[in-house]
Figure 1 (cartoon, rainbow, N blue to C red):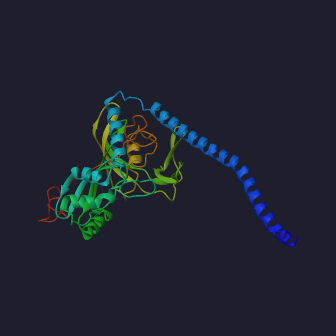
Figure 2: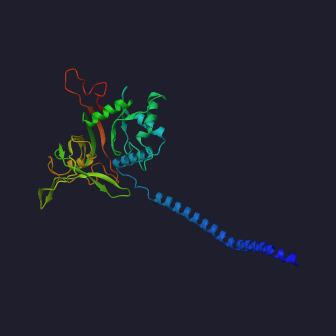
Figure 3: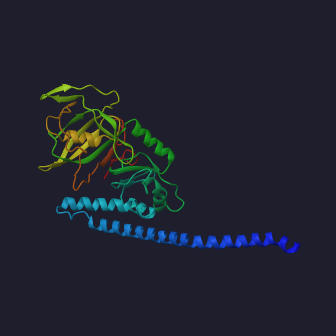
Length: 340
């Protein structure tokens, strides 16, 4: 009788485990079935949501442009978005087709609209990324990467200087820093500046812009304001920067103008604001901020909410006026004028 009693606990423990396993299996089957059903429902909801989003995008197609200007703006926006998504080789090829000057030291390209020069958060492709590829396209597979000599804003198009050697790039950067390079920009304003040529002298200040990401924008900080129909001096902001720009109307219609801008002061991103002030109503003279800007968002053809920026039309190396000096318009080196 002792033997069976000694084996009983082991049989009971083994049997308990078997019973526990059976009970666990009974309870786990409904839970697994519920989880599988839940996963199926979640996947189904996700698929339905994606289909609804795609359908919504199709129904929200932009209206068909009616005017030639609207169609051209839409084409420009579409082309810009395509450039940001293409393979780097394709972008380098597009830049090589837009070369306006090339010699043993420099390459001057025509920068496309909407393409950033440097990388950053959310930027898929930029000009600096494809400079090694562009160099190989121009000078073979053993060519060293090209170097940036200056930068242009994302919305600015036109003349952009690259250098083959780092030393040459530093020299050109020094010329820009010491303002030995005369820069001219073209822009389109809504309304025609009066008078057609003059100087805009309105300080600018950097202000935070509300949006999904924190960023800043240069805005006008005039020294005068309108009060009861009279112009009174406003309190100046110590953080404001001096911004002086010469402007000249190159061509105009009843409601818009092609304006050439030449910055006189230190280069900052304020040209759209200055041009907007220049195209407002009223006399054009230094420090007359009472003129309303051409458009709150700055100058440019605004069709369907799309703003065109600046065109860097020309760069002119200023040479000393001494006997035997190279003509700034026809020199073979950096004394050459580059124009789009």
